[in-house]
Every structure is written in C-alpha cells, then in structure tokens.
Amino acid sequence: MVIKFLASVARFVHFSNILIGAATVALCFQTAVLLDWLYIPNWFLLLMFSNTILQYGLHDLFTKKGSTNAKPKLAFWIKNRSYFIASIVLAAITSGYLLFNLTWNQFVWLAALGAITLAYSFPILPFKQLRRFKQNGIIKLTVLVIVWTVSTSVLPATFIPYGFDEKFWWLLAFRFLFMLAICIPFDVRDDITDIKTARHTLVSLLGEKKCYQISYGCLFVSAMILVPGFFLNIPLFYLASLLVSLAFTAWMVYYSSKHVFSPTSYIMLDASMLLQTVLVCTAMLIP
Image (cartoon, rainbow, N blue to C red; front, side):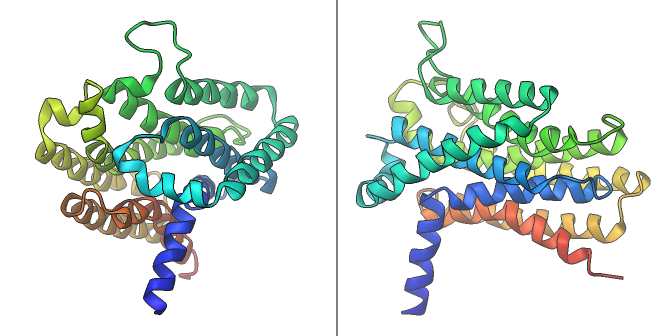
C-alpha cells in the first residue's frame, strides 16, 4: 500500500513537471556551490523553476497528443486538466514578473534560450523540412543538451562579478557531458515515434546499443574531467560526491536500457540531477 502510494506520488511529481523544475533549480544551485559559493539570489532560482514549468507545460500541451511514449503523461493531463492549465498560467505570471530583475546581459541569454525552446516545440522555423527542431532527432538531442547546459551553468554564472574563469569552463564541459549522457536514453525511448515521422535520429544511425555505449562513454569522460577539477582547487569531497553521482547515473542509464518504456526509468534519470546536487550538498557537511 505504501509503495503504491509512493509510486503514485512519484508519477505525479514527474508528470506535473515539478521534478524537472526542481532539477533545474538543483543544478543551478550546484553551479553556485562549485564556483566558490557564487551568490545567486532566490528570485533567480524561482525564475528558473517557473520557466521550466512553463516551457515543459507548453511543450506538453502542443506535442503530446498521439505520441506513443507520451500516453501515460497525456492521460495524467486529461485527468488533471485544471491543475495543468493553472500551472502554466501561474508559471507565466511568475516568470513575467521576475524578468524585470534580470540584467540586460542575463535577459539576452534567457531570451535566446526561450526562442530556441519555442523553436524546439512549435513550428516557427522558416524551413519546409524543418518547421521545429524536434522534427530532426539529432538536432532535437543537440538542442536539448545545449539548452539544459546553458540554463544550469551559463545563466547562473552570469552572476560572477569578474567574468567566466577556468572553473566555469571546467564545469561547463562536465555539465554538457552529464546532460548528454542522461538525454540519450530519452532519445532512445522516443525513437519509435521518430521513425514513424521519418526523423533522423542517433538511434537510426548508430543503433540502440551504440547509443547507450555513448551515454556510458559520456559518464566515463565526465569522471575523467574530475581530475583537472582537483588542480582547479575544487574541494576533494565535492569531486568525490560528483564521482558517486556518476556511478548512480550509470546504473540508472543501464536500468532504462532494460525498461525502455517504463516511466520509472525516466523518473530516475530526471532525479539523477537532484541526486547529484544532494550528494554535493552532503559533501559540504564534511569538515
């Protein structure tokens, strides 16, 4: 009974986009910690949360109908339609209000990401064969990884008063590889729908097995990148916590490879971003 209740809560948090919103905030906070406790105001974290809820909500509203792998989420939104609409409206109001706190540089970054995100989901591109980025599986994957990397590393780093330093570029490389590793299993899951719409995908080019090998490879290289982090004076306990999180993520990728269409697989992959930040924060407690 308890397990069933916890499973229903997990599905609600996942399908309502609360989990992915929390993951965005967690990675932004992790960026602040790894960049020498960079000060990031609470309103910025709230803005990133509301933006994520808004973007994913609009994406779900426009693109989920008829998608085989999206049926559980579509059923959730049909059942909870009032919550669905309210979350989008509230997120839009919150984001609109908080935008006025941004500097001009931050606004340009966020506007660029917003435009790319809209072009990912909505047919606004001026190309006959590519009306939105999602129509091409490889471009879709690339855009998704770049947007997540920039949102959770570049945007928080705009609060650095002295500009981007070596630690920032180290973190950017680590974050990009980590995001690529956890986005590839989602791309594998979407492959059935992509094939039906004749999209070029990484899976169709390389095969499912090699895609998972690339995902593991990204996690391995991420682990190797931790070594120069030591010479950049990143605390050893932080690096150790990141290494542990990579090991957990590798297991989650393996689990998703065995349960491609299980919502549990992708709840765990989304949660891996939260787990990584929790481990880093736990390392802070070590004297």
